[in-house]
Length: 130
Image (cartoon, rainbow, N blue to C red):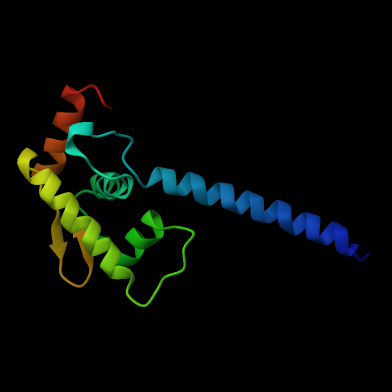
């Protein structure tokens, strides 16, 4: 029995909605559930970058995964790494005063050393931001 075109479109749209929700939930699982102090002045994307790195400590998060998590919904341009590198550079400068380092795994991605992750958890716990 063949589905009518309208029924097929409805079924495909429902499936697409289910998959979009699953992607949203998976993205949420990849970031640490923590907020950082406002006086660090992290932009939303820098904040998300640090959350992703914290959630994945001590593993390196590849550039392409960072792009997918931080800039989802946009097509990759010719130089997607420029945005990720700029975010990491700016976040490094803002986190340096609180002794948090973002390290580069050359040609692969970024990671937080364990000491930096511990420091982030300590600061956010002390500030009541977890």
